[in-house]
Length: 512
Image (cartoon, rainbow, N blue to C red; front, side, top):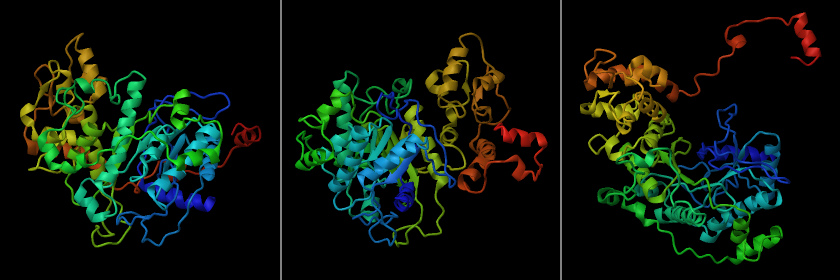
């Protein structure tokens, strides 16, 4: 099992799973674990990987030969497969030792997608029913699997995700010819419909909750009446509508019935769904997410953000994750093995994703066909502001909440604090600093009582030089994540001190 664990945890590192729980489930007598809505406490392994979740593959054997994938069929690498019981043993033992807060389970495709998903279903079924595990579970859906399996596994998991793989259909045909947009988007649509039905069943809105104020921001992608994409977007990325889920057949396949019989008794004759509803289990309560690889193909940031925006609008995703391409395979269709991982670009895309989800921006505002890529030397909000200097400077004592959100250096919390604070008096720059505004960026785009903090020309070249000077160190750290480490006093200052007699006494009595 140790050998399998070494192989399958290493193989799982390419799946992004930096998710908070989003589920509030208390402990229960006779069972183990709980899940806190506020999120999962993260810790990190020696190589920098987060270990808040036991992040493993069910198997790294795969019938597909995607050119970018480390686990592709043509790669000569060690292969391993967990049994459902082994997944349960690892999860329960690590959880008891407080090493993990939950399970992230993905898999290669061994045999057929349905057979692979059935193995994952068995593992989750045993965890929830036999072992009484109430912790957080994030499971990856396998495109092409039987819809009935996906439906039933959704009652055992807290979050599900299906990898979009690449931003465009052309990139998918080029690097993963065994996969199609239809097989990928069909389970995404099915999970979305299942979440909506479950939410309506318990008497809440069909769409996932969003952060405070997001639905009220004018023109935002989650604002009321703005849930559908425009004709131009639909035409440019028409492939996104190709993946419609088939009919939601609630009948249960003989394979699932046989699996449940062979596992454990106690599930009602009607199947897992009535059993789950009776016990208050929701369908994918933490929502679904997806992941796309960045840098393996030549899509622009504009294309990626348009796809991201459309995924939020059409499929009501909780998150879209970006994974910078790591050159591990040699192929004429892929970047060379000496190509650096686009960490800084990935970082900027995540920042832009936050602008879509929390700040009321749209992809067409951030980028355009004429300027299709972000300036990686500044964050996307600064990049947008430099392209729209006609809207600045903003008077902080008069601007409304939506306009304040668009000022670089002002976040959601600080914008709300400004709106509240100016009810009791006029604000100046020292007040903004106490509120939490990042003045090293905001100062160039704000006025307080008609006065700028610095007498500087509102010109793109001038402001770009000022902002890139501030961002230079952060950009270098993002691109060189292995070049620094945590400071320790004794190692770095060359300070050596022998233990004193008092230290020896404290050691004997357990004080040190």
